[in-house]
Image (cartoon, rainbow over all chains, first blue to last red):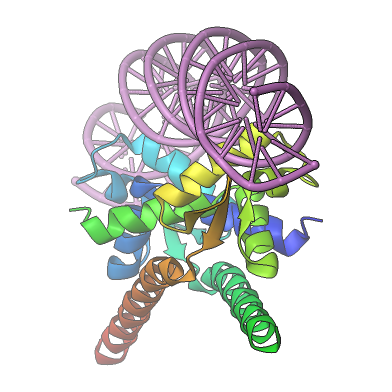
Length: 109
Length: 109
DNA sequence: TATGAATGCAACCAGGAGGTTGCACATGTC
DNA sequence: GACATGTGCAACCTCCTGGTTGCATTCATA
């Protein structure tokens, strides 16, 4: 019963689960919107690699492109982080409830 | 300059970035500690597949094994979720600061 | 002690992820 | 228009991921 919400979470987590992409996100957070070319200098991989990573990030909704002249700037979409946070919180919460149930069982037993 | 914290975050996100693993975590959250065999019935993949996923989750510190008799029960370690939350929060925060700087530039300009 | 359930280990496979190179196309600038 | 800079597309390569099957091993228990 993998809900749409769960699949979305998996996509977001997948996009976040790579060092290069995390670095890109961090840089976008720190510097504001940047082009693939800007992101690629100073990076250890090719511009094309960065482009592919940006596509993954865009697919997960973590980043959005905006044309400015001949450049394409990618801006962070931090609202999408909430999808990830929601999943983490819901699992944490049900785990806490499971612990409570266990505690009650022990006390009642 | 990928810090240790950043690498840890990538590992955690990677572990979370798979539908089967998310389902396992959800189930562990809801039902408490379970064995690989328990997790595999009702799942769409083999016990061995589940075992591999549990190894990934354990490697990321999201789950911990505890022997009980001849079984090995895997328990959720939701504290590890904080590694993920911290990254999300720090990037969100620096993005907000970037927006503020931009706003100030516009007003001053 | 025999036995059946649970775990562990290893080989194997298909497909996709991450990366590269090379070249064509668009577009601001002189 | 010429030129340089930035982007887009495609082919290609390697390695890892997710999954399988088969068999060996551990170990509670009847």
